[in-house]
Image (cartoon, rainbow, N blue to C red; front, side, top):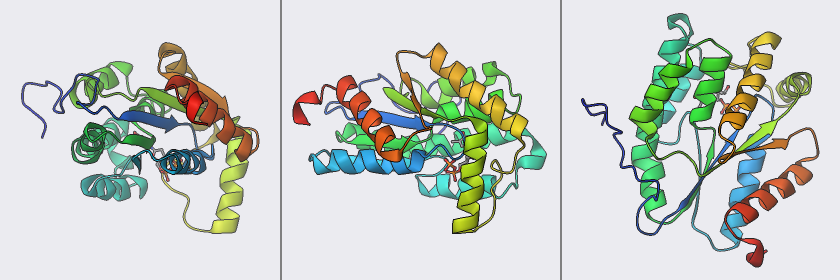
Amino acid sequence: MLKGNLKPSVKSGGTYGPTRGRFISFEGGEGAGKSTQVRILSERLAALGFKTLLTREPGGSPLGEKIRRFLLEGKVKNYGAVAEALLFYTARLDHLEKLILPNLKAGAWVICDRFADSSRAYQGAASGVDDGIFDALDRIVVGDNQPELTIIIDLPVEVAMKRVMSRQLTEGGEVDRFESEDLRFHEKLRAGFLKIAAANSNRCIIIDGNQSREKVAELVWQTVAERFGLEHVV
Ligand code: TYD
């Protein structure tokens, strides 16, 4: 639960406890192919015998999934981007406490489809919420529990929009709250992710998403293997 003294409400320390799991997030705009890549990576790690948790934001925990529906149906849009940001972080707090941290403490590899960088890019860079708000929310909710590695899949906006539209045609379904934003929004979003990567070069790596999914998967694997010393097991 959120503490009144604004200290991080989840245990911090950056080591994730005695058995030390690994925390990897994937980020990027719409249509970047993240969901495919998180699945491929977690299957590959699991096949090597690692305990793996694949999760997503918003969502992951029961409260997070409820908030996800609320946000993606656009029910909070009229209250503005700050209200949306606060709800994304409420979902994140629950997700960290109930799922991510217990799994990290149990030694799992936690692969998360979006995390706090998405708030800074979607509600911040693309929707105008001030960076200082995210600094404060990160301090309160995330503390030292940022991912060790963040893979940002970058895609030109026109390519991304074409993919979203063709997915719509083949799979059907509603266009969600953020997919329906205009081109300018998606340009600002892309620039936001690139700025986050530049400001956090130790944690973030950009992979060009405008190539085959096999090639992207191989680059993801090389990045993970190199970062965590897995070259010997591949
Ligand atoms: P999702 O269907 O998971 O999209 P994607 O497949 O692109 O990841 O929907 C999540 C949406 O929520 C996506 O449009 C990004 C947005 N989002 C934010 O705006 N802020 C956040 O903090 C997070 C985690 C997601």
